Image (cartoon, rainbow, N blue to C red; front, side, top):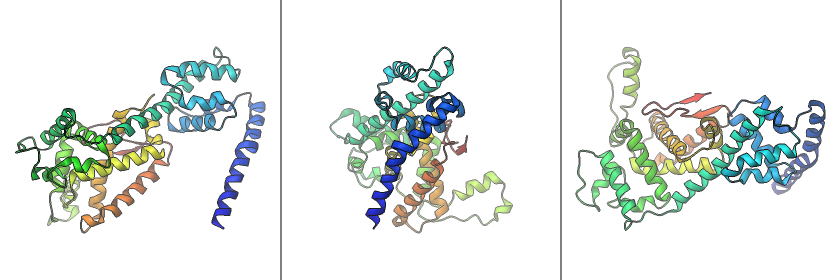
Length: 334
């Protein structure tokens, strides 16, 4: 029965896209004198709301030129826009802003695809202890998180101090490859104060108490006291898990809302790493709010956190960390 309903739903979706939707577009164009791309650009501000609609319009267009525009090389975006306007018989002299808007949105679309490819390449590259660059990056991570503590040897239980599971971190990077390492290092370098505070909190095994009522504390003090509740998780392992979460948001397309709102043109790896920093801090706060009894509840808390982020990203005007600022990342509604 479920299979039958699924097939029936797919049939009606196909019927709508192939017949009803195109017929409706034809009628609206005749009455308005504008094609769908024109209406989208003129009726929506630059950002995810506009770019997502343009992406959908191109994907379901009957013209191969418009469909192929989604995968065009960034260097050919300008020429592609010219071809689209010629196909749609739009005069660029009387519609100068249209080509600018289309170009910005198309750059975001192809940039997202390029970012996905770059992130996937890093994820698929395994950590190699024989590679000097890999080893150098790992040593940088240690120095950022333990600046006053020399590492006694490459294989050492000291790695557990920054949240790895054993004496050799390379085994912990298997799932996310170099992507996990690069994200952790970016966080440690660009938001060092917060990273060190989170690491310190994560090492505390027991809860602390304040002995004072919240009303007796001013707001900054109370916010700080709320972080006094011990975390009890492995910092580096959580970082790798949050990298996996950010990766799944990127692959699933949920991050389009965020990236189309924060990247004026092409999203790049920097935007992805800034998003990772935001997710690390938000997960840290979320873990405190959930107050799990032990680390065995990690998967439950992570899944709940993932669902919350997905709900937030359903708003096309939403952006995570629109302007990355060390120690001051927060969710805002544009």
